[in-house]
Image (cartoon, rainbow over all chains, first blue to last red):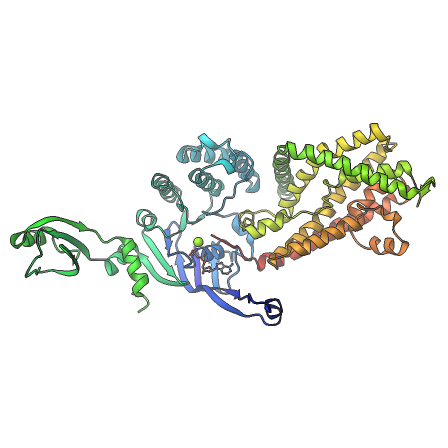
Length: 326
Length: 276
Ligand SMILES: Nc1ncnc2c1ncn2[C@@H]1O[C@H](COP(=O)(O)OP(=O)(O)O)[C@@H](O)[C@H]1O
Ligand SMILES: [Mg+2]
């Protein structure tokens, strides 16, 4: 459904001089450098997949999505979505996709939200029966009734996102692109958006690609994750693989009553020690109970706890240590 | 048969879409009531000012370049009534949308950007026409006894000319706004273009008061057709040329619309959308 080969997007960054000769120098000599926002990325996505595209801020997520939705022309590389080259036949192509860019809205700012939604029926030439049934369904799933009559400018961030999701789906798109759909939302609002996205993917078979820098989004929604940083695709595969490969170790944090002597544990290594607190790391397969009983046999312990490896920490480790590029 | 049916359906749904957009634009602009009222007052005030300056030009003689005092007052009333309708002071909504990155939302919809904005602009123009335009003309009619078209036919031609002027003016403004796709500071250039518009359209001064050579030069541009043509037809001072004037208006409406499409196609290829 989506094929991407050696996709690149480079931006020319112009440097402007700020001293008194600036105007003249800027005019005579255009200092510029190239920023590789997306750098030689290849992947393909099948119909019905739900893919998380993740990376820190400035990684190149939005830039990729803009190319996939036909908003930006690639610098080089091949790109085909649903049989179209997005930027070449914009009008025909965008009729078949839905997109939400989390930081901006597609609704008419000063008109009641329902007016924006009803205009979509005419824009996409949606048959009236289909339009009504979709609207009814999304009203229920997204709880739109409370604010349909309010203008978009008066909606909260969460309400606006719900309305935008509805607007992106009214015409039954084959593919849905979501750029940071949960950005800035509180936990409850995030959860509600996630449930909705999941339901759309399962019930309608809509192919969904969502970018995020929130790991919880990917953990809860996606079976496949792609990770990008500095424009390079660092990982593409099952989320569990990522965790097993790079974040398999769990941690045991122990507070002792007195400074421990002769501390040694089979199957665990000390990774930090500060005053009376010692942190051990141990493999996923190791049983915590064994470790604890070994510890309590020889030492007086005040407190202890086990930490699961967080995908977030895993990913930070990957970014920091360049684990994948090696 | 099926083919022609679907063609009919296609045009119907396109017209419907256009109207739905226009309707929403009307709805939006009609909510700005205070702006309409203060605008109206300023408008009348400047009208008085301009009328007295122009009448001073008559300085005793009964007519200037074929216009008498009533024609001149009518000219001022019309230009004041129509200046917002055809946006003689310019317009930069599209440009701002590009700079703010909001253009993305519009490009994600399967509509022609030109028609989408035209429909909105017609909504804006119609609001200005029914609020400011008509009230100014009515006030001027009762207070200054300005001219009114003498027949239904003339009214029709005036409205036709106005409709064409709206399209020409829009296409010109749209093209100027497209400069935003090329330059991060196209605003200065646009300001210059809109000053030219005010001058060359016959808004600041009736074109018939200009030197002959300048009138000939301007006749080769679309500017007179955004304002001056409507006035000539309304006052009836160019009756013999009505068909010619309307023909030229159609020509410019089609030409500028075509040009806008060409430039738009190039613009979206080099689009850089900022943010998120
Ligand atoms: N229009 C642009 N001009 C110059 N640089 C840009 C432009 N758009 C994005 N960038 C740069 O490209 C990089 C990737 O940006 P983006 O795709 O928005 O990242 P993300 O969405 O992952 O946070 C960033 O360094 C950003 O500053
Ligand atoms: Mg982004």
